[in-house]
Amino acid sequence: MKKFKLHWQILVAFILAIIYGILFPTSYCLTEKSLMDLERNKFPVEHIENLRKLEGQKFEIQKDFLGVLNNYLTDEEIKSHQDKIISAAYYNKPVSYISWMGDLFLRALKMIIIPLIFSSLAAGVASIGSSGNLGRLGLKTISYYIITSLIAILTGLLFVNILKPGIGADLNFSQQVEGLIENQRSFKDTLLHIVPDNIFSAMNNGDMLAIIFFSVLFGFFITRVRQSYADALTKALNAIFEVMMKITMFVILFAPFGVFGIVAKVVSDQDDLITLMSKMGLYMATVIIGLVIHTTVTLPLIVYFIGKARPFKHMNNLSAALFTAFSTASSNATLPLSMNGVEKNSGVSNKITSFVLPLGATINMNGTALYECVAAIFIAQAYGVEMTFVQQIIIVVTALLASIGAAGIPMAGLVMMTIVLNAVGLPLEGIGLILAVDRILDMFRTVVNVWGDCCGAVVIAKSEGEKLLV
Image (cartoon, one colour):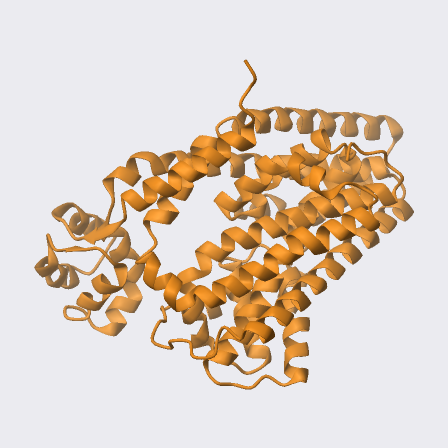
């Protein structure tokens, strides 16, 4: 009997998860248990007494629940404790029975990311050898990432100016978002934090730029020590990498269950999908059209003409990684699957894969850069602000720089958006307009981010004279 391929298993799980999420939508209800949870979380006692008046009332839409809270708490009190209250009132037993599978799958992927990156990148850099080879490979990689991100941004700019999704947008259809300014980091700080003051702290915090910097440095200086030490270290790193890949292959077997748990929860948590589509449909279509063009036209042309490879065979080889990217909305979480697909299925050497993909998962964000550009122009159109040619060029440049410098920042996509909006004087409140659909579009743009990295690996491998399977 022919084995049911993993990517088809993931696709089936994805479709079933959408159906499950639609059948069991999330509601919000304060119960005695949820009030006790708030009390344990140091929620003010006087506020709990006010909320007790809502006990047992069920709300199908989060916005309605928050609206009723205004009758019992002040705006400032809701603003300070909104996340705690929503978490306590969250009510969806059918989804809670299966969402743990998604949480467990994500935790397993995150568990292997850092040892996988460190071992593969350090061993890869050590095998590259001289500083000249490393510099050449680094220059090719960075150049590819900057050029493809710039093309993606210009694609988004073209479609947002043609379709004009922000004209006539409902400014009342806005959500509150907190913590953007607090998490914002200047370009100078981003560069400074590339060098970790404590590598173990950086690994603990998942600071990917710092981990990559240390891994490259470690791998480079392996080639500068006595040959016997260099051989022992390289052998040890390769052994660790092989073990991590075996663990990765084991974790990947559970991808369909993880995808089912993740997607079911995402779908069930969407408030009033029909209203959402009617209000934000054109904006979502603009972003998705730009992403689709970049995915199916721009990047394949680069792979075909510059990489001299077959782009759609390469895409088929990465189907499991791309489905997982869509489900998890995380380039880093997808990295183990991307590395496996590029190396095992498309035939790119470990030397190239271990250098290009970890770096790309951190700084190459084609899809996110395109999204930031479209979102900024959409917000300008919604507020009736005419963007001049110069201002649109500023958005292009800022989106490009922000997409490189946002790695490792909490709420990276939205923090990047504040940088872009500040650059052209647009109101930060405009982020609330796009927040309702941010999670959905995040899934689409992550696929483009991962696909862009994997195409880069093929192009650079071909430029280094490698014989590939695509």
